[in-house]
Each structure stands twice: as C-alpha cells, then as structure tokens.
Image 1 (cartoon, rainbow, N blue to C red):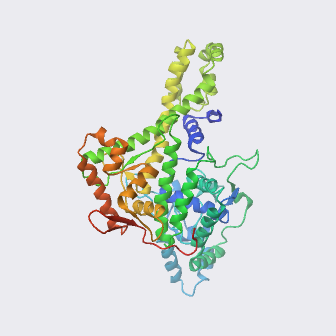
Image 2: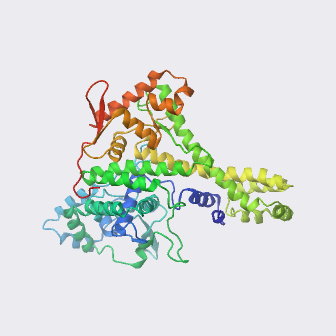
Image 3: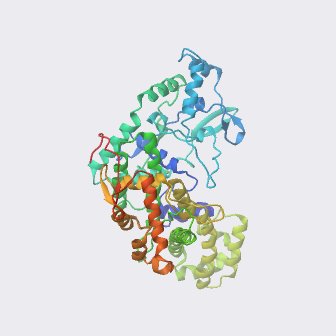
Length: 532
C-alpha cells in the first residue's frame, strides 16, 4: 500500500490525503448538491461531450457574470462588482433601448441557483462563486478568485471550491461506460442535445460575451482528467477504476436524462440521483474486509411524526456514518503500521526521536501541526520507552488528532449529500435521519422504472431493498432483522410503508386498482433523442 498519504503537512492535509486514498482525490466537504451536478456538466462540456477525454477546457465567462451580478459583493474586500463605462457603452450598442439591458440582466439573475447551508440559510457567496441553472451550455462556467497586484485586479480559477466531486462523477461514468460504448454515446449525445437546445439563450450570451471580450482560448485553461506525464501536478482520480457500481450509475443516469423532461426540471432530479449515487459510492468504499457487503437505509416516511420510526431512521444514519469513521481509522492504522510497524526500526530510532520529537513528527507527515497538537504528540513521545508504547500510545494520540478532521470533512460530505439530495437531514434538536423528499422519490422511480412502464408496489419495495438496501415496510424490516431487534409492533412498519405509498400517489407515481393492488408507474415518455 502506498504511503504517499503521509506526505509532509498539517493534520488537515494528512487527513485529506488519507481520504483521497479511500474515496478519491478532491472529494471534499463544502460543496452543495447543485455544484456536484454543475461541475460534472462543466467537465463534460469542456471535453466536447466526450467521456473518454483526458482533459477538459474551463470557461471563465468573467464579463458575462459581472454583467449579470453587477452590484453584488466581491469577496472579503467588501467591494462590489461593477462594469466600466466603456463596457456599458458596448452593451448599449447591442440594443435599441438601454432599458432592454436591465430586462436581460434581470432575466439571467432570475436563473441564479439558490444555495443554502446546513441550517437552510442562504449561502453567502460572492458574484464569482454564484451559479446559474444550465438552461444552455453557455451558462456553464467555473468559479473564480480575485487577485489585486499594484492596484490591478485579475481573476484566476478557484480549485479549492470548484471541480471536485463533479470531476469524480465524470470519471465514474467514464469507467462505467468503458466497456459499454453504446451507453456512453447515448449519455454524451443526450446531454449535448439538452445543453445545446436553447439557441435563444446562446444567441444572447454570445452577444454579451463578444461585446465584453469573454473567454479567449488559453492553453492554461485546459485541465487534466488523468495523469498525462510525470509533470502533472494535480488531477482527479478514483482509487478503484473497475467497480461494477459505476456501470449501474451510468444506466440509472442514462434512463433519467432520456426522459422527455426539460433541462430545468431535469436538473433538480439530477441533483437527487447524483448525490445519492455519490453517497452509495462512499458507503460502499467504507465497508471493511469481511464486513457485510450490505449497506442499508431505514427511511422515515412518516415525517418525524412517529418517534420509534424516527429513531430507527436516525440509528440507520448513524450506523452508516460509523462505517465511514471505521474505514478511515482502519486505513490510518495500515498507513501508520507501514511506517512504524517494524520492531527493529522503531527500537533503533526511539532514543533519537525522544531527543528530537520534531524528527518523528516530520517522518509521520505532520510537520505542520499546530503548536497545541504538536505538544500533545511530543508528550506521548517522551513517555514512549518501547515498541509497544509507540504502536499503542503514540498511535492512539495521532489517530485521535487525525480523526477530528475526519469528523469535520468526510462526515460532513455524507450529511451534505443526503441533505441536498433530498434523502436525509435533521430537524432542530434531533439527529440526522433518512427520509424521502418528492424530488428524491421521483428520481428513484425514474431511474428504476422505464418510461410508460409500471411495477407492483410490493415488488418495487423489494427491488429497492435488494438493489439499494432501502428498508421501509414490514417485509424488508423482517428480512433485515431490524423488526426483531426493534421489538416494535408490526403496525409501525406498516404505517411507514403506507406513508410512502401516499407520497408516491401524491407525486402521480402510483395507481391503485384495489386495496390489494397498487402499481408504481413512470408516466413520462422517452425523449426520442436517445432510446436504449
């Protein structure tokens, strides 16, 4: 196993590098559900809709965004973005009446995607971090950052916050269609059609961009999707390239985007499906050794109105977070043992490390720890008198320090994916739990039932249990063993199942023929652009 994760750095860097070895490079917290999807669409558009590409072009669209968000704040400098008089005059030349410019700006501002934090408050974003609904590919662009040198302002790409999970999802679909090229072509062509269809928006955007001299082609605006040479500094990667789950993701995604739904409505469904798929991926990668290959989700379909069901759902969420935590600690132990697991090496160097703890801290890759954390590590090193002390006491203190970062980053990814995907969250004063929003229910039905087809309700529940580990009603609770362990009356699970049935009916996805017979249906038709 590679020990590259333990390069010199602080505990946050160390934790991030360990996580990259488990889940993938640049899979970090802080992203919102819409951003995962936008990043993926940006990358695909930047490859000219080629899932086999090794690099992609990044668009700045600086002038367009300054025009749309003029008057909005600009970063921590407390300034606001504004166009110069020269730029404004160029825009006025595009229209017969100056008022038309305000109308055009208002139209685009209304396409801004609202982002919120974990408490539902609007995210406080600067103009260059705001995004628009992808009604056309011309509205796709990358996040920027501001630089001021000698009172001259310039902009560059912001890698810390953009092109992370979206790049990894691109790779998942690329690997998942590597041996199914017809499926790959369908996804490429369908998304190309959806994102190039609205020619009216393209026409307006091109006029504004040309007037403001946007997006001049620059080789530096290309970014690698894989290591192309030894000089490649940073690129996205997944630890496993041949996981069968990637093909499953591609099939589900293709079925969703192939429906006759406009891109605005499709975008919300894509958020639910993609965030759920990323969550499934993370939890699957978190299973350890001989541990059960089954990840389960107990869904509270009663909207937190029934305490015992809410508690079961919260426990299900906590159990899955524990999978992530245990995987991280297990992997950390392997990395630590690679460095410190040799008895002869440790005993030969222990006296030197006690005399100069900084040397050991650097060897472990934690040279940038805070003084407070270093002090804790040094105290333990001074007390280490044997190989057993190092592999026991030292291991424990370093693991605890690194695990703090795990809770801050990896677990927040799990929560953010569930919250933004509409399949989990919390109420004030309660724990995170699994539940189903309308958007999530629709996405799951459309991804699993083909257009104009239907499936008996109980069979649908069983299919979801087998494929995803969804536990909702009586039969799945008994099969999983959660019914017996909970010691609850069976009526609780029956009510939970009935509540899902009502949600499906409310969304127009369920038709009842009798009390005993209900069918789940996908009411949409194929778009006609892609048929598999």
